[in-house]
Length: 163
Image 1 (tube, rainbow, N blue to C red):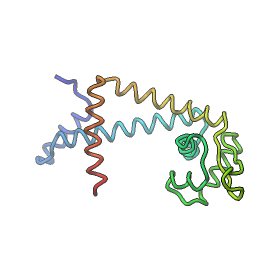
Image 2: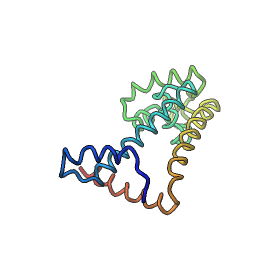
Image 3: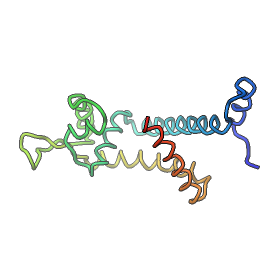
Image 4: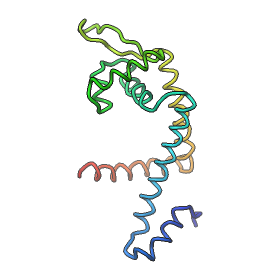
């Protein structure tokens, strides 16, 4: 028998109030919410320890995801924000020596944004800490169980994305 967690107590409290409640649906959704909140807190603590505001980390992350070099408009698109809004983020990251702006080799009128060694190191430190916690949590499962969980969550996400 699996050990009980705080969500089991939550479901037990609500079943008498909502007799039609599916305990498996409520349990799964509530556990996902708790895990998401836990990972968010871990990220906040990690970034605070690195003295990196979350919005700057998001920008470093988007830039790293493009191989360390992108145009401001590509970053804005990746971040889901207007192109002119990314300028302030880039200014702050440039002051911290996390990025540099360089003339585009493709078009001299354009500027590219590049991760500096300091920016890449800050991004890596955050990613290592976050990845370590994700590995720790999912270490409760076997590799096959992790693959199965990922597949099941994929199916749920596809359903959410279809609406």
